[in-house]
Length: 255
Image (tube, rainbow, N blue to C red; front, side, top):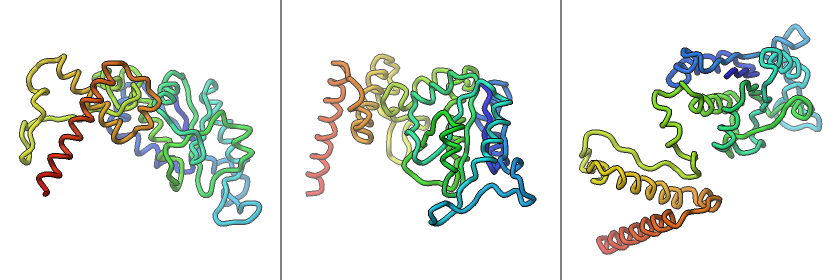
């Protein structure tokens, strides 16, 4: 897959790509990432790419023309690319959208800066806008890197074990289950016995129950969007009953 990032800080993006999973994906040729800097298309000697907003107010706005020319340069590198603007007011990025991106041969990611970009650029040069969360960041470079990382994990050949990408949070609409490794007992806390017994069916059942329970506790909105099977409803009810029993026991101990 080929990705081009339109950014005022190409070194930021290029440096972050050197490490871990992304670094290996680049080394293996699974992923290729380039950058285009709008500043190289600025018309004045100072390479100005921003200006004051019409209507007044604080901050500066990225100008449409340098961005348009940068997008044209990016499109020349990846002519089949989906053009995505990383913006706080974009559609929330979900795992299914990541999977959609991963199925594309090419992608252009536009990292905004300052108060935002001229809306005419978004209207005329962008296919869609996405947001990585209900937070305001200084620029779109970190969100762009998040998208690249999430997409790279789904590309064949990136992960040592392809099953890792299948068994992660959000893949089937649930949060991930708890994970444990050696030692068996740490700081007075032991690994759940079911994970040590070697019964793979029991382990799978426990993991699904924990995933359902965590999602119910931390992201009930995800459960509301998911139609649970009869078995899943049973597992969740058992989890909820166990939680209630634990809270009652803790309350009695405090008394």
